[in-house]
Length: 355
Image (cartoon, rainbow, N blue to C red):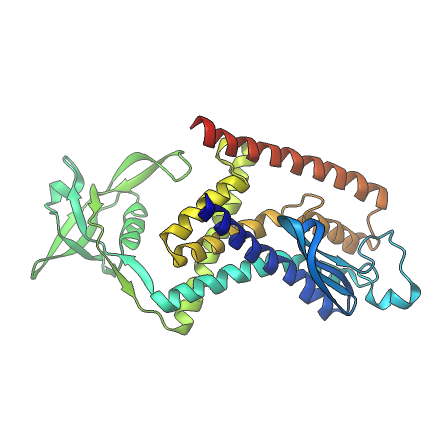
């Protein structure tokens, strides 16, 4: 339990700091005054005031905020402070300030992935046969355990994932496989068969396979600086894409809301990652950082995405959304978030006591 709590504080602290620092940095870049930079909500525990900014650590560690001068459209701003007012900046600058929080969370993930790839390289699973299924195209063609697939239809194959993608993309047409067996290179013509399977969401899909399983053999491929940059961008994109797909499926009802987790689940996962090693914990921070970014960009009032929606409307129509509409929208958004928080806490408690 102690490990879970400590890891949770580390994870949440890093994510909140980067998110709020993004807002803070771009706000100051555009000359907006920042009154408070807080890690946590509620009563101030400790802090230091520098200039007009109160840098503070607050009692409730489930978030953070940056309080800017003239942040609310109806806020009264001293004429002498108009140059520091958020509301009085051009709408494009306000959009960039709001978007900076999620963007910095994504940048954090990219930096973490880059560090991992540059220091440890990229782990690649070899396209080596672990076993051959009975009555499969692979068995009929003569593939054996230990065979290493090196080429398919003239295309060099360097990993199990590359091989699986080529086979699935064949749509059942015959493929010419070059296979390394001991000291010999053999060729086999195999026609993949379509079989029912399930994807990571538990949905029934059809895939073309030849009936082999992986041996599990892998190697670490060293990456140069630019290769590590490229892989970090690809990894971040894949996580973002997965998050967007998951949210879409949740909205459509394709995935049960029982799969959602809250702070307790995050604490447990953070604790498990910490026990597995510092590297696992850092990787977990990158994943959660992207999750936080994507969720914050949802067009729900009170989230960054909601503010961006209002500013987009303002940019199109040439005038701000009325305060009345904003207030109603924010109340609806807050209600949605409260319901979501109740749901995830319920799921967390159910997993602990009834699973």
